[in-house]
Image 1 (spheres, rainbow, N blue to C red):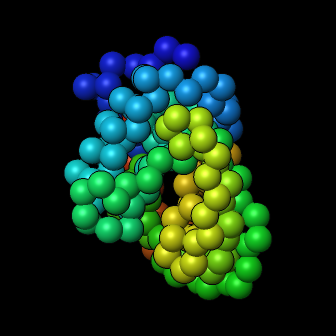
Image 2: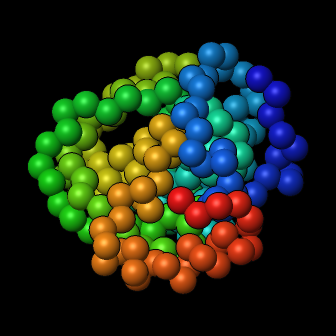
Length: 176
């Protein structure tokens, strides 16, 4: 897989079409993926986010990074993740680094089991609760081409109308 110039990599914003694309699985665990993940972590930290999926930087592969701590080295890289064991439910407002200014109330499971691969291609399994489970579900949505604004209630649509209109004006393309 040919990766873009990592120095020029940036977080893409709605309505960029890459955000609506279902991502391809990672097939080869190569050095370039480590560099991509490091750049994604840097961008996530700069934007003060807790998670960032590869399509959010214009790379449509099944990879995301996350960290619930500000401690350096606490970041996790997940490739070809799957979620199971979703349990419980909670509604909370979520934002998205690719949809700045928008907040949407999302119902998410409070527990999830994630199976994925690390940067070396080794399988990993983790159980996440509350915020961690929520972040995984949010990033998995990105890998499947879904955005928080796809699930807006009528109230959320009214509350986010201005932010979405501005994003469309700034980044072009039709509204959802």
